Image: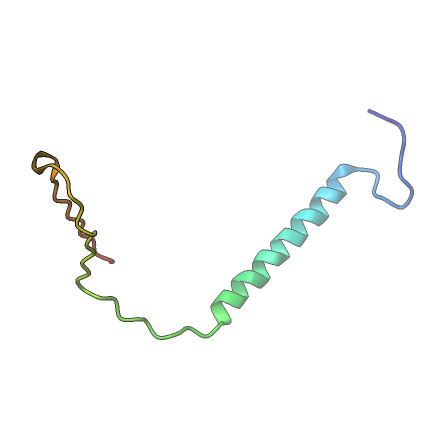
Length: 74
């Protein structure tokens, strides 16, 4: 290691690491409190059945496929 030291900065890395850790923890505390305290909007009604169709394209009869995708939100 180098013996060069900056004036005015902590000399051991553990104090720098602890300051950074405390700053990050404080940030997450503030962000978490903001999420808990913020007003929530009413739930939006989710459509129960949605159908998407692609435009018709001229393809060979052997290559026609039917793809049905169904999903539900829990």
